[in-house]
Amino acid sequence: MNFGTTKHKELPANLTSYDLLKTLALIIMIVDHVGMYLLPENEWLRVIGRMCVPMWFFLVGYAKSRDVSPSLWLGGGILLVANMVTGFALLPLNILFSILAVRLIMDPFFTRMFVNRSAAFMGLCVMATFNLPLFPIIEYGMTGLALALVGYMARHKEELGFSKLQVALWINLVAVFFWSSQVLAGFMFPPTQVFVMLGGGTAVIWALYLFFEPKTFSIKIPAISFLGRHTLEIYVLHLITFKVLAVHLGIGYEEWLNVYLGYTGF
Image (cartoon, rainbow, N blue to C red; front, side):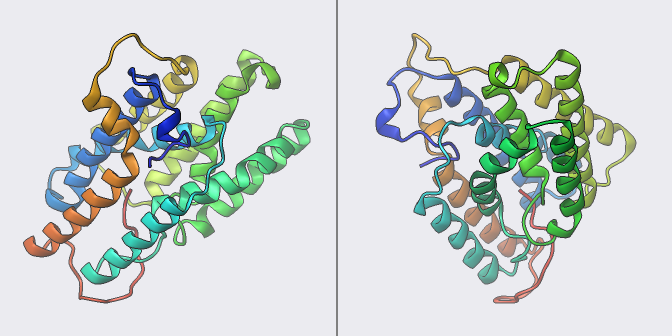
């Protein structure tokens, strides 16, 4: 089980580019959660951690499959129960529900967007209009869909036939969605950290579009392959562990079984 869509039995024994990217995103995500749950005074951990967000949604948009497997629903549900028990926010719904939502709507949405310029403009308006209202309900609002658009564009470069100017326009607009999501999520850091977070996020988005491609290498690194192919399990287990530790340390804990609303972080 993982954040991607390829079943383990279909994966090669050798290291793949998916393994590398997912492992990198996983490590950065854990750094982010150390900053959120255990060391909230160290803001740089969260600044660095923001870089994983475009990676996850890029992979959702890039994947061929639109898997909405029971394991994703189960993982999302387990984390909801964990939040309730440990006193963390139930809303917005965690990132697993965001991924499920993007997988369900992205094909019909993007297909209609790229019919012509008017449709593309309307699609952009829809994402911009619903981003803020959805933010308190599901993590990243419409920003996850916008970031998945970069993966979709990278997968369908030849079919879409965008010019370099059009690609630059779309990716920079997606970067704006990413910036806005960080502001809406309350990441109000000092100027230097804001610059690193937003500039780094934009660089990650561009690098993913320009350089990522499916590739199987001639080497085996079992540790990286394992991490990259078990991201869902690791995501759920490490979050539960961190939440329990946060309760034990008295960081961010409200009240047992207290159902309240607020940003939970990725």
